[in-house]
Length: 594
Image 1: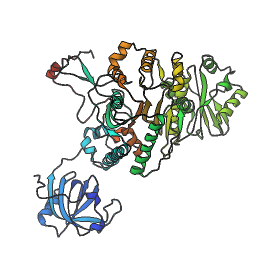
Image 2: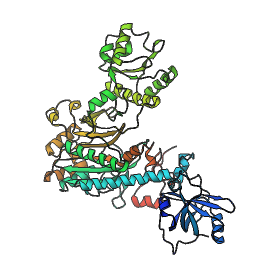
Image 3: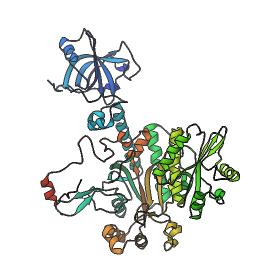
Image 4: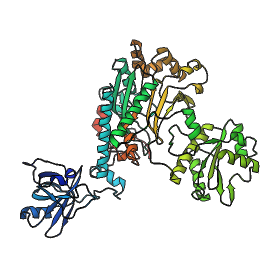
């Protein structure tokens, strides 16, 4: 039968005791990691969030206490009163390995059934099972340490922004649905039947209204929601370090962002991050890396072969160039042994799966050159390619051609990442950079329309103001992303506050005055009453912690995560609701055929 804690007050955490406290009487509480019964000796490893300490029971232990210890099993919750003493069989496997507790009193506060998996790090149990019993999974030291680490990052975050004059403000969770790039999660209103709130994809417009309100510097560790497909670094609900500043330009915002990163890495990891971060324009990173979030811990940059092969008789290259596209490639150093013909065939299927038509290759073998282009290219043309690629013996060159240069670049960007993983050449450092001067518009092939790459309140660059009546592809934005090791950590921009300019950008996005006012009227009205110049950004807290810990997925740094199909296995959310709840909301579920 479970006992009570009455009369006892914990004096220490298990993992904090050291040899300096030998002779001290302590009261400890925690979970049983394991119990070892050797007849005349019993040892219990007691665990809490700080670590493990050994409880010892022997011939000198009171009989009732010894018998109680014999009944203890894994994951029982215990309270123990005892004296810290030197451990006879010391171990360096745990920080408390020099001492143990000579137990005088033991209480079993709660018994436990046999758990569905052992509470240890490097657990081999399937993740689905661990997520079903997430409260048990969270007892594992690895996950507890991850979440304690996250807490430390959040604390440094608040300290840093407070010291830099930012005021922490909370924006609403139930908001008006506005277009922000991803699908909204909608919340039906019981009072206003047929109308819906949305959960915020970000506090974007509210933080801009904070600037109009005169708060000058705002920050928030904000919960955000996006109804989009999951992946390793994405969850439907996530946390963002959100900030906005008045009377600033882009340099001020980037300086604050760099200062924050420098501070949090130093305080939490004791790592000095060099600043300022390297800066690249959007066009530059696309040309060199085929990605707007490049990982610069390795090379393998894209090179342009268009001029070298423009007179080639090879039909694929010829049609790509004549169609306004290009031919480009990357060189994978020392990759011949890894990229056999069989592995190249797999890589070719990979690029076809992401929309490319194919993949040409050249293998620089010890006994000569082997290539998918051999029968299509002259010796001079092949030498021109090799000269441009810088390929040497042992290297493999991969080439993509298409009438759409953007497709060529993004394909080679994906091949670059895939090759780096396969060749195991990705370093362990933290490579930060800024990507700046994004295009304001991007062409959406599905809708056939130009849309805002960031959001419609992003200010175009000053040198583009006289181009707004020209090609949309030539308009650039005062937008910037912070990138770490191939992951976008932050996105932000300087905002439009001029009503006439905002109206012009809405027109260029195909919005009528009526449509724009319906969607954003409250913000447009606010800007009539003296809006200061302002800008800001949102830094992904989950992603930042994931990168700092080098965790493989966000699920390792989020308390109760969703799985690939956006469900939570522990509570079985989402779930059906009572018919009466739907009636109250004025909602009827449409029946669909299987």
